[in-house]
Length: 382
Figure 1: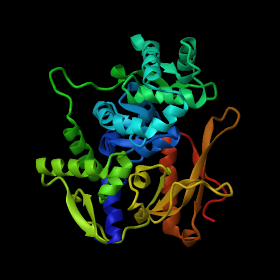
Figure 2: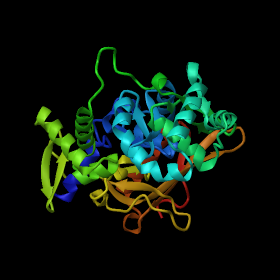
Figure 3: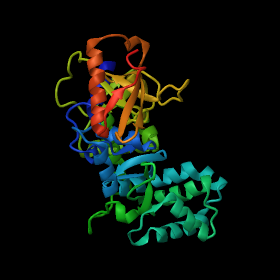
């Protein structure tokens, strides 16, 4: 397998190429979890894997609870489908609490504090109540907890990891931005039907491993372990169990002595493609889904931007070709519009009709997603 093959198969398995997902929550089901600390851009990560989902569509799925936003895996914010969060949380929780142990100690969260704060938080979201972070802080402070800064963040995170809280219906601030709320975990996450046993750890490992490699392959065991927060031994066990149940689920290829697992494409890989530009967020799963084999996308991301450079990633046929960001501008009564700051690397800049058309198509798709007039800024195509 050549590097170009790795890139083309990944683009397909990640649904950045046809066939696209039918909806944003279907795209999420394919990927299992999607990093989502920057909510506006994370919406786009899901929508751009569909036939034409909009920001409103993603926000509706979040409000309905099909898409939940919580701390899981490494841990950081992720979108997870409500059908998958119960078993994925149980699988991830021991490693998450272990990763957070140092911060728990620094913020005074021991088993007693965790239990008492969880009871307060559970009461705060009882009977279908959805609470903002500030409202939860008020309830904790009334119960005698300091509940400020890092301590508040980790009390809430502990409750998320422990199955007390899940994301609720977002509320819109006075400035128009959506704000996270929290709700009862069991209200929002999809419980197993009555009489159906929960997945065992081994079944969960198998499900995670097979779904990871089918949605992100070609990738290595180390890539999956770093993405999931699991040990390499657990990933290998999950792979073994998954392939025992379905030997045809994945194929393998050895590259530079490393074994890569992937789902075989449905058809032959195409020849040299015409230029296609994808605007992806720097935390997109096309980047964050890998560690030791991330280099195949041809760049380094995420990185701290220098000299006011954008931090999100422009892909040209699956490889890094520049950076981008958006600004939403509101002027008078004309309504909002979006300006895209797209900066192509020197090797790809200059006048090229095919490239210009590819860039125009990507800008138009982003405008359709936002539902507002969208155009390139003056620094683009330079």
